[in-house]
Length: 193
Length: 193
Image (cartoon, rainbow over all chains, first blue to last red; front, side):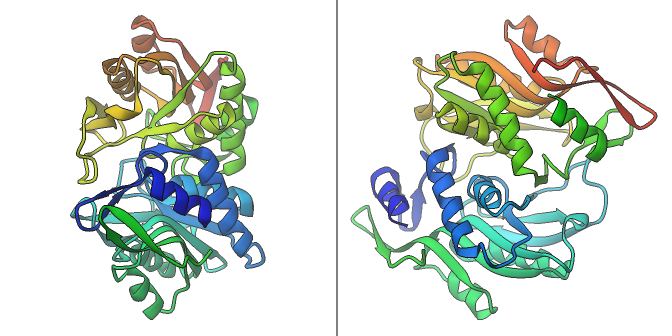
């Protein structure tokens, strides 16, 4: 997605060896126009796929997932990173290691929102080692629902997330694929969309 | 906002003495159409106010804040509940007690996204004791920016959040105001919008 790659080039900051900071438009401050374009791009690809729900993890996945769900005219569900006291009923859980936060957290979705009739599109902001997406897939499959595909805004192609997901039989579609960082700049691979 | 009150009546669940669960359309599964209506309602009210940014807290505030920002054609910023390793620069922080999670957490916004020229509309999903909004106001004022108003999706009018904010000189506009829970049902007060 050219618009996204251009924004990453102009507004992203490469920090250290493998961190890309995109907090001016995606992970902290959010550009609603860009998010809407992202959502419409995913939705265009899956408009004939019979998607019933879009699933993401709080918090940075919410904006792109919301616009994808809006364009597909289905609900969006964001998995929670910790239990709270209003979440008492049957919940489905998985353990997820966060690369950026360097902690393992429990991710959960209320059982009642997923059924064996559901065909899910996962949307997340980053794909690095694939742990977040793997956790979501685990939860969705516990409910007997089908994961149609995993839509990623920014894939770090030098980490093994895509491989992990593809080897488990899942389709991954990324809007921007980062091959490497070179002299503080981002070098892209050919994106999927 | 009639559409919202109707949804709370039909889909909300009253749990115990003062908890309202709205996880089927706002805090876990999200109804994009309703969120869009909410965003447009806030935006309509503030379209002449010169708002430069919409600010919320992760995670349930993001959806209504995003659509408000889209309709006002300004960026949305979601405050973070914990520091992560990509957030290393100057950050502005406040302590916030969460009623639902029963913990105090640090809320932060990167300094670079707020300036003394900013006129901020805060949007959040719930107003109970006002601690979250108070924390956001504290951060925004640290940056020298102006808080124009606080837009709330669901206000628990039997708690003192509105009073706390109004006594501090802030305008509060709530789309649904809950007077009390009675026999497991929600009784509303006249909403602001």
